[in-house]
Each structure stands twice: as C-alpha cells, then as structure tokens.
Image (tube, rainbow, N blue to C red; front, side, top):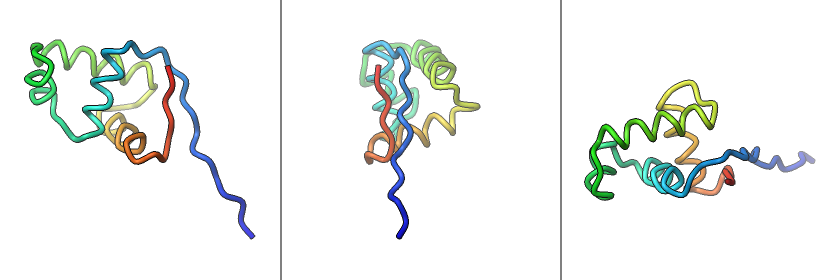
Length: 80
C-alpha cells in the first residue's frame, strides 16, 4: 500500500493585496485583466506579481501560475 502524500505548505509573508492577486493569477487572469478588475495600473500589478514570484521562490511567472492553479484546486497550501 502506498502512503498518501500531502502537498508541501509554503509559508510566505504575502500581503492581503498580493494574496488577492495570487488568487486571480490562479484563476487564469492576465496582469491587464487583474489591473482592470482592481482598478490599478497593469505596471503596478506586474510589480506585485514580481514580488510574489520572489517571495514564493518561483523561477518564473509560469511557475507562479502553476502554483496558484494548484492552490485554487486544493493541491497545495500557501499561508501568510
């Protein structure tokens, strides 16, 4: 019998706004779409996405998207 594996938990200090953007990234929204939804400049959203990438120690935006998508479907947990 194989033992079920649990997803790693990444504990990172994301601000509430970063958490909101991370959630929207996980829903597949682009920076422009997130900016429009939040009433912000897409450059502001890009800067926050970069900060999120650094905090989560992701190599690139694609890895942030993968992680955000996994969080959306419950495969991984990110806590603040």
